[in-house]
Length: 279
Ligand code: DGL
Image (cartoon, rainbow, N blue to C red; front, side, top):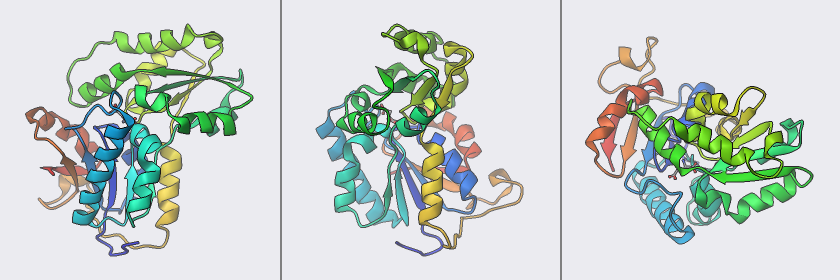
């Protein structure tokens, strides 16, 4: 592992979803320099084929790791991880932490034995999810639903743009309408965009439904893999990134210039990101 104190953690997603992971990583490792990558030129991943996603993710991570020499890469995207984690690990030397649907903790949490899972179209059809279900939830009922509309809603929410509020009720109704769906008490948010909408989803599912995602486990894993290492973040001012000079804070890289991303800056600052570049 590259243990230069300035070597960053690189978090990768198709869009803003990885910020739900960054929030937990930042809380666990406040001093860690971070490069957040949004492949907004490829967004959404959920409606792409396995071959398209695998090629895109390995190609980009190859170029990014060469350029930025991170000490660790986190694929903060369930779609990319369930499809490309193994192949990316085979070709890159850097440690890679993936994001996989939190079926194991959900199976431990459910009281009714019925778990809902919301993800992208690509994620819910993966053998990786079948294997997690067989290993950890074989005695439970796992109901899967693809909710691509929620990806667009999260992207709009973080830019302060309006979105159709009916998408939350639609996702809840789709799971509730499946056999045994009325008994769902635990919902796996198997797309990193969805924890950014947890308040809206909780209102749509109603009281008594718990939500779980992989971000706590990822933060713990990254903290344990980097234990004892020193960190030199661009600046760690006591007053937060806004109180710092021009070089303070972390950087977000986008794969496409989009003037609308200017509206993301206040959300990004909340995660300690003060600079925006196109890669
Ligand atoms: N945030 C991504 C995930 O965790 C996918 C969103 C998309 O690009 O469709 O699956």
